[in-house]
Length: 308
Image (cartoon, rainbow, N blue to C red; front, side):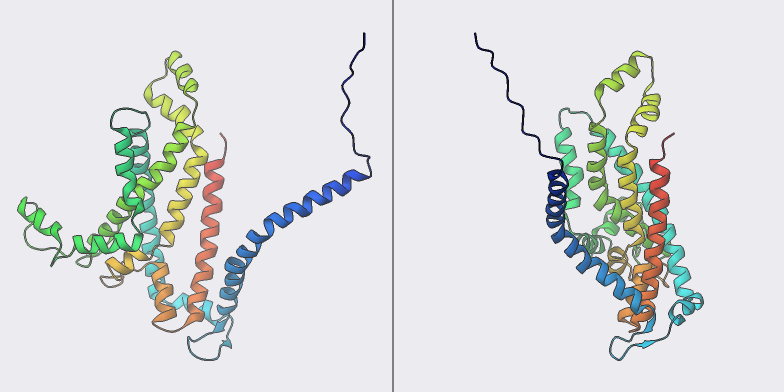
């Protein structure tokens, strides 16, 4: 009788292991090189240029001159900058709270499969397929006091007497029209992300908690929210960043009015660069906005990802 002994796999000599490790490292670097090149070309280089521009008097047409730190010092006397900062922060808080509550509510509503749930998910997500500029123009037409149907419908229902200028009549109505646009456009998109996080929670965890007598509120508070923390962190980061960088809805709907009451920081940057033709001051505001975004996102992620 012959015993067949399985052959052992060949083991590389110790001297060859560092060589293989270096080969793998170079292969990984080559795979990452195209992405690193694109990031450097379209992110790091423009970022460095903006920082350099912020230290110069840089007219749109003309020769730049070094004037550091005049661009930053001059921002302290800019009243419109203070108005834009306050409005952007207020808008960010309002939109983040309302959009997150609406998106999470929709995700919980369509979480479990059933008759018509697929149709509801599709209907909620459809606005996300509309370009933001196109959606802003759509709302501008709907809310127009001349051709828009909203005023006529509300007047026929007895809820409105006379025409109301929703986008420029008052600061409150202008802000409300922009918030309504954002909720309609982005609620379905964020719902889909939150729904993915909800469906990743094992069903067995809920079943075990129900056997222990947990109520629906306890299930939500003790299981759903803690296990959804990474997804919530992602969604809130996108909401806060998008709100701080708001431009399209205000430029198209309100033009920053009435009386600059809806002028966001990005609108201010646009005005300084392409209306006042002062790229240096616009770059200085951009650098400060970027620094604020980094601080806000770092603090937000640290708080949301902290384990109890």
